[in-house]
Image (cartoon, rainbow, N blue to C red; front, side, top):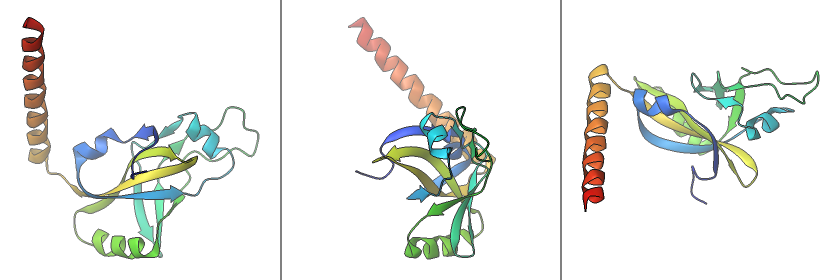
Length: 156
């Protein structure tokens, strides 16, 4: 199964707007207790989350997983820092790339693959304001072309 495929549970739509994603990595994630049940229920938010390499390991910060409703007093903390699972070679490559100015590790989506929760992280370079405007113009132009094509198809 190619990376990034599976049942998508949450997506970070703002990431493609704010960053030019150059490379993606599929990672496993270390979860506690009822976190996987909450993720399977779709109660996860990647909006303000980011990944960081610390002491030779990759950690995901600010990913919000809501407490599981049927959980008890051993429920998890929603904004806990979670460890991402990558191969040693990938981590050392990321260490070198993220030290460059303007690069960040951004979680793009979280999905289920063969019963396991996976996080797709992207190595992104921050976009400038004019780049964002240009992307919006391209998107709008593409939408207009599709709309005109669809209308033309209806007329025939």
